[in-house]
Image (tube, rainbow, N blue to C red; front, side, top):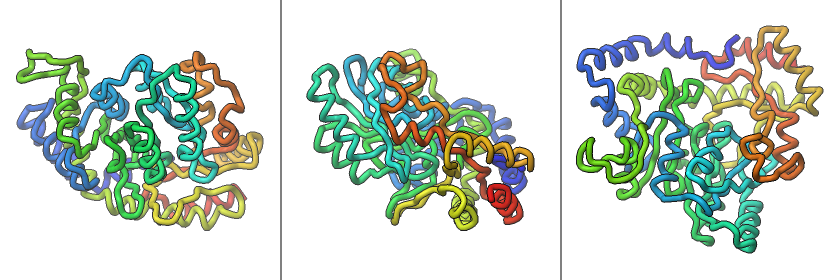
Length: 370
């Protein structure tokens, strides 16, 4: 059994993928070919925003807006410790300080009430300048953006939606990656919409932000490639990866529907045995991962071992939260500082999740856990 079954997916779109790759090979514009603009238009329309700027990775999709905003030393950026390191890494890369905020114990997304407490505390201390919030759409479920955006407006903060795991999800019909001032996503192969390498995209309705991002994406380019008006990066997406994503977009909506079918079957089969994911009313997850909670670490180890014996792969997201990573040791955090996050890290594990998971496979997993 595969944790994520990209082979089955490829079988459905093989001709489109090969045709797209061959078109790039024929025209020879491997960097910034016509597929880039086509994909950007398609993604912007899907999300429902004015502009999409594709780039080289989900990390760069977070990094580039931070650069465009001029966030740097002395600035505080608020985010969750229960996510992949890229979210907080980009804060440190621009020289700012990540301020971690614990997560909600049901959605596992950043807790808005604790967010405001953290902002007030940083303001009162006066050592850092609160500048932005990076909420994360964890495991495919959008964060509580109504509350987050209200807090951001109250405290005059920018919001950068980390939709690396959220692309394809929605809240009250509004797509993930349409929230905040800017949004970012990842096209890493394991994502619900993934290419066959690294890739990412940035979404915004801000015309000036689009201009800045287009410049930053190509080494701070001005009017031509040898006119550099600011510091930038090499953040371009390859044309072949764009062609692959265009092919995948043709089945993406159907895959999201099927992911939700699989998730409902999982929840029905497992809800009496482990803690299954919670999706609030009005939300739709894209189910980047399907994570459950065991009773404790020993129970998790036992379940993972028994599943492995039956050929069922599992994974743990995230065994060591960001506030306890060596990379952020300078912040002085310890176990227990973010109790919900620390408790989750000891119990959580992920089961196989993809649109092509069969009823028999789900029944096998449920029987092993039972």
